[in-house]
Length: 93
Image 1 (cartoon, rainbow, N blue to C red):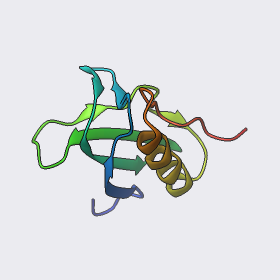
Image 2: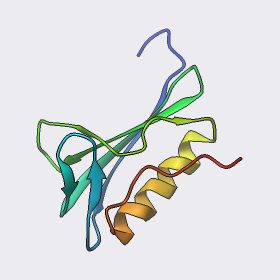
Image 3: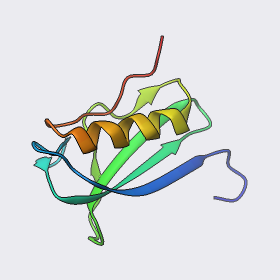
C-alpha cells in the first residue's frame, strides 16, 4: 500500500497433521498459503487460505501485539508445518 508502513510476507506451507486453526471455519489442512501483515500500529495479523483459493481465514490468535513481524511469520510457518491445530504465535515478551 502506498503511503502506509505495512509490511507483508506470504508463503505456501503444507500443514502438518491436525492443520491450522481458523476463526471462521475451524481447522484447515493440506497445502495452505500464509499471509502475515505487520501494521503501523505494531499489530501483526495472520491470514491463511487453501493455496490458490479466493477465501482468506483469520489464523486463530491473530492479531498479535508487538514483536518482529518477519520472525512471527517464520514462527507461524513452523507451527503450521507442525500441525496440531496451529494458532498464531505469541510475540515474545
